[in-house]
Image 1 (cartoon, helix red, strand yellow):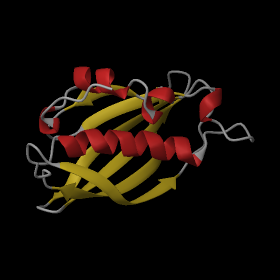
Image 2 (cartoon, one colour):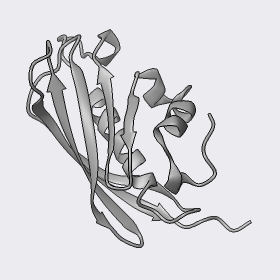
Image 3 (cartoon, helix red, strand yellow):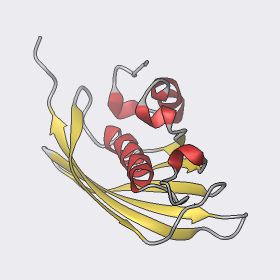
Image 4 (tube, helix red, strand yellow):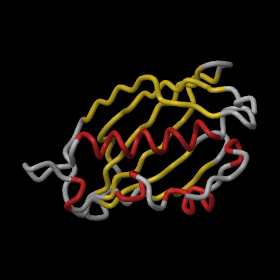
Length: 149
């Protein structure tokens, strides 16, 4: 897994390269946009995203949202710093089905010295219809200073 040396400068191309062989990569999470103001990614729902009842599993919603929140966090923290998720809260408002496109947009709500809070709005697109808000995730990240060698 290739990570750029300066995570605060991560781009879609970097994310595509370093996601391979990881949990988000195995779920088919795709980076679409990574900017200083937001990040956007998606999954196209297939059988690996479903619970036994045939709808998108809560863990798949969470994995998509947490991954896209991470991309937004990378662009929000100082060069050389890293982070870890310390809390997240997911609300799902609608069911996802096979073939749906689920798109997450992560926006920083708070960027502090030791924490970053990201809101992730997740929309579901079914059969080419207009996007519909399907979930909301709030993620709190703990900012980690560079390790001393």
